[in-house]
Image (cartoon, rainbow, N blue to C red; front, side, top):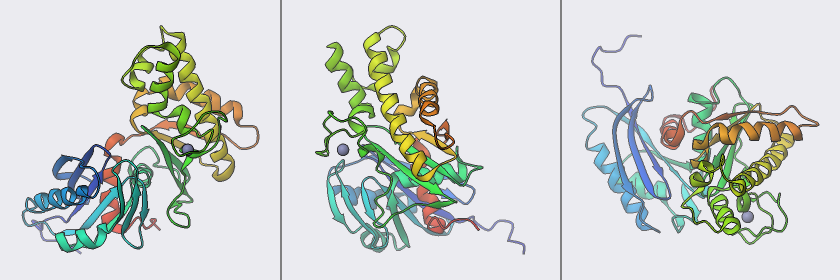
Length: 307
Ligand SMILES: [Zn+2]
């Protein structure tokens, strides 16, 4: 089969709705960006109108390339089958009918999914997960969540609410924002690291990055950092016992700390690997583009596993 020499390549509309920024791209089959736009994320249901607008703006720039469909990835809980963004604490929406609204607006088939799932699928197919069929992608940011690819399939669970490892109870005595006691997120998220450092040292810091920068010179920073690493290793050890990933890919804002995070995490994980083989721990390759790349893959094939 030969294609016409100048036939326009098809594109997918990919949108990653983050807590602060909406990233939208037209992406060709090879994953190259044809056009891109960003908007600040409005709070609550107003975010829907901004997603619709940024999609309209991009579709107007597509020249004659056919658009195969749209993938939209969002934080929080998602009912993929019903096409509804069920809940996001960050953005503050509930039961938003994204697929129906955006499909009517853009006149395209639209699929939606959770953003951490998108990051995991993108790393599996095109990033740090290439070469394995069993990986866990862990997004370490303001909160902590994960996605699991097992035997090449994204684990979706009963209602799509899988791998919420930020709320594994690993540190009894520490209160979590979710109302439970001892959650990983209350010790090891970027927000928790900054908050705990300020509480123990009396020094105000803006974020976990400031704590990471003090690791060489500040014993309190080292302690808070190591506490976070140990708690994370406890959670990943549970994950290893349950699904036994070959590789754990660390993404999210905290992954920018690089080896300052990964090296002690590998040590802590090996110390806990008494029964099963420890996972290889590696940094995300796609960084903060993982979400939008996952959205483009979602638009193209609905994340059907390659056969
Ligand atoms: Zn919690």
